[in-house]
Image (cartoon, rainbow, N blue to C red; front, side, top):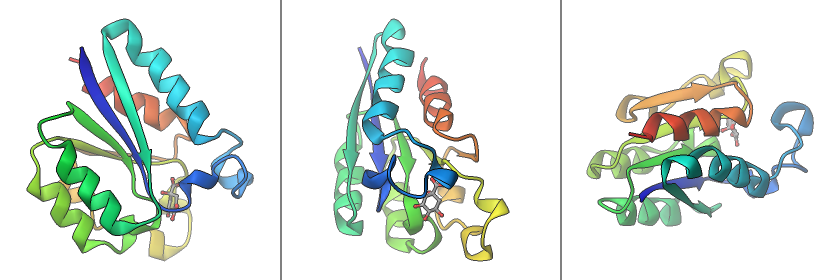
Amino acid sequence: MGKLLLLNGPNLNRLGKREPDIYGSETLEDIKEKIIATIEPYQYQVDAKQSNHEGQLIDWIHEADKCYQGIIFNPGAYTHTSIAIRDAISSVDVPVIEVHISNVHKRESFRHTSMLASVCEGQIVGLGSKGYQLAAMYFIK
Ligand code: DQA
């Protein structure tokens, strides 16, 4: 049985209610259910965690090392600011895919920079909640 970690950062607990014109109407629970349906046939399971706190996200990234085949990570606004999360990703062997629901490149210029992308395996941007499923499929071996 393979294992993936679905990790979401600040304000993503508000998906479904938060700016639905940008982020859609699905909740994190809906997204998790879709990932389960996508990966179950391949004998993979997913653990889902969300935090609004940078240090908590860093602790979970450290703990994920050697426990998961991959992390599907939407770091929210920490994407654009957090050297500490970048260093956490660099410190572990588990591959990370950075996912953004919205196309950050079509939005404010402060969203165009990612502190994390260059230490991630890849980045999926602007494909809505489907981006999480596509990231999960990448990790299926
Ligand atoms: C986001 C994009 C970020 O710029 C923003 O701060 C978020 C969500 C996205 O999924 O599109 O919180 O990561």
